[in-house]
Image (tube, rainbow, N blue to C red; front, side):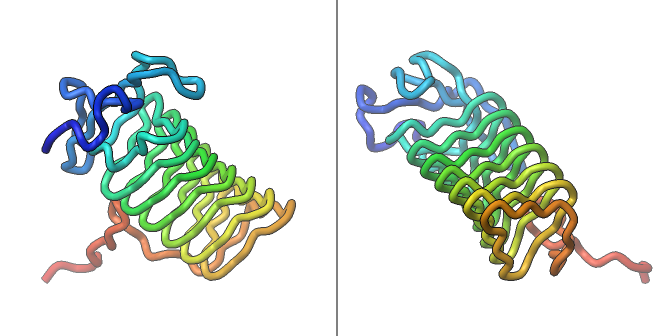
Length: 197
């Protein structure tokens, strides 16, 4: 794998730092370093971790900071931000001015955009979306085809699935709907447990 892609170095906003890497779920991730000033990032600032330049756009003010990780086929673009220990993986997307903070996770085909915000220990997965100033926080889990829109909030220990729409200033903190199958890391089903032959 080449650590440089199609952008000439003078036009790139960041580079991968080959001697600053970690292994996550069997995948090598590289710390990023800003090559120029943009947004509130200064040239030389170290950021979070990516598998390759395919995970973080060289355009816009998007950035991955702190110990945050973006890998697999996940993409962060436009002016999106990933902070803290946030993780975006699988085919997760964070775009426009979406943000993932704290220990928030976006995976499978989850999508955060249009000022959507995921933080604390919230998880967005399946084909769920948080957008239009929607919030997911606490220990909430949003999955299937749920849409959190127009300042809607999902928080606490809420687990919401199906085709639910959380709209307006609605706040859901304890709702259990179509609980997803338990998974064993990175969205894979756990092997069944039972007595051994």
